[in-house]
Image 1 (cartoon, rainbow, N blue to C red):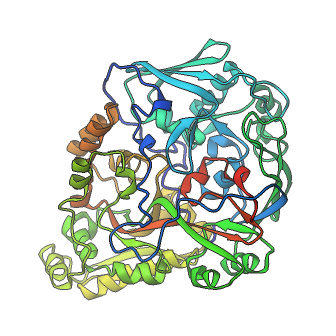
Image 2 (image 1 turned 180 degrees about the horizontal axis):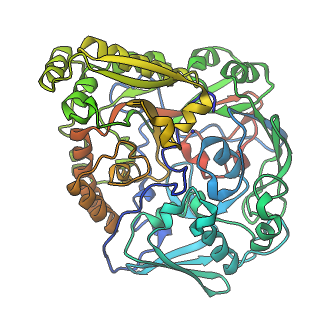
Length: 562
């Protein structure tokens, strides 16, 4: 998800059944090795043309300059303190920004948003319901133990344990068993073929920790002491409410981190966070407040970069029992929204209007024909107030009242809520804004009671894998983020078919149908694509610009600037 910026990731987790639904799947009997990118759309990565799409007013950077050498330490600004660093509940930006440097997964998302081996040196798919992970040898945990297949079975098992209420539990709903099939081999049997499961093994869902270390920590795991993981940094001092330190792990199996220490400072106020970046109190940070983009760009103390974020800004429809139950009202609001004005004011000009709930980058693995089909015929983004007013009148909704939640959590939230209110007023709807505190806004994602009386609220969604289904599955009947209870048998069948299909382009062709259905029915109203923002002062460089930092050990790449 929490002060500004908004809790963009709550799209996936909280609650006793946290996570996206894992739809049924079907078969393809062929051997596939992840490292060859044969079966996963995630291997394709996003476009690298330097822009974010049609009408872009800013450039995307593939990365930041390589460092000239090591650095003793650097300080990083984060907008909230992680409540825990237990990998099973790592569902939001603050947790994963830290955790990605300490705990590693079976597979790895790269800065280019491609997939490569992680703690598993190889992953193979000998039949449609079997994934075999062959592990690296000699990998040391921070607690001094050596990684084995038993640790993998234990770690993945924690995600499936209902007593843990794991954030990633639904990604394991299709798992029949996880077994040790050798000292350094683990075999996962699926109930049905599942094209999505192997992709999520590059996220926090695939993290491996020391069984002995986690067991010894007990209920304190993730909140005190070490995390008993394998990453380039180990957890150091944690001063609650103030800061958290990571120390370089010298027995790391991979490339040694360039910094000896990383200090994360918890700066919940957007102005304080910006001032820390300007003063040098913090050397860098992700999730820069949009209202500070211009100030940081012109400061001369560092560089503001933009990279692929796989993120869309949307209006989440939470109640279809009232006026929004008529799709004509949802279409009218979409037609009346001033998307360009929102991008300029709410996103600091760094974004692009969109009529798609998915980003263009997640379709990079598709053939040109499929990629074109995914965006052909989608509703226009240009405003048409007259047409919108007619739709409201046809639906008999003129004069009806709707309530939109807003919050001081960030101007991207507050200004989008205001834009919805303005759109409604022009087409005959009464839109009330209900302002809630940042923590109460977070509760909208976790507590049905908090959503009572709320018809809509702003939601920014990022993908954890480079596959459109990551977002599109949210509108399946019963999916966690399907707050309004949208249900369409045809849609559910397509989700099942797409999840069933290992062949990349065949799956993406099915997903184009899902994309069009979602565009027609508008369970969420798409507004804009939003890049990742990262600021680095003149001391440091090397941090990835893409949203890969959520699952990639980005801090290990940061070193002294030339």
